[in-house]
Length: 288
Image (cartoon, rainbow, N blue to C red; front, side):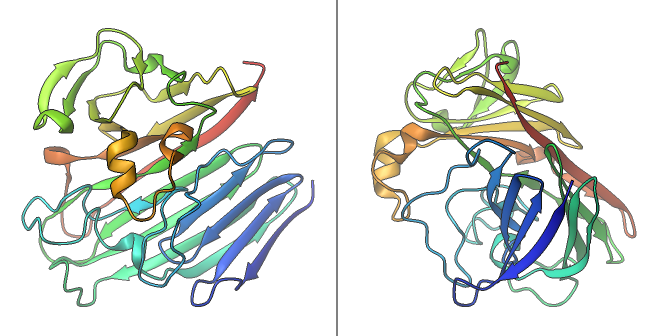
């Protein structure tokens, strides 16, 4: 099956890569190694991107799959530092790329061993992305400092749905979660999750495989994740969406964030010289 990787510069200061494998299509920005379009063969983009997203150097893109690193959410030590870390607004370099009959793949890197005003650690970050019959991605962190680092991670996927009010997430049934809308109170999910307003939850010890049931979509979204401790589920609801300058009106109805993560106090304690990885494989099964 033919595959290709093409570099484009349609947006000033934001070079991108287009990966193709057969009829499958993927678009990613080198800023943040940020995937903005994943369209499996014969299907539309599975990812939601705001119509009001800002494509500017140094500004996070609202939608797609931003990478949260080296912390998720607010910095636990200094909350004034950038939400979700700084990787999503930094330019990655292309370390390698390959195309063959099986897939199109690329490895991107970020050297976080130099001075960053937001962080006093030193690490090397690699993101490998493979496009074939599904999307496979892995974020790898290596501690290149001489001391232990605490690293948080989130693969902050925004997934498109026909209507979030009809979407159902059965896989979280029975899981404990921390509810950010209630000062991180710990609760138990007693039934499949339905989005009926603002949702901002960190589910603890989720299963490796989750499915999103969307009656308005012909395919069922499946995410197989590894290396994570948490699953973050987020939808801003109407009020917060209106307050966000890069969130189009009504856009919250057409998205749900599902995010394999190392969040809150479950950051990875990484010894000097050690590495770890967090990844996911995303697919959509027609007629499932």
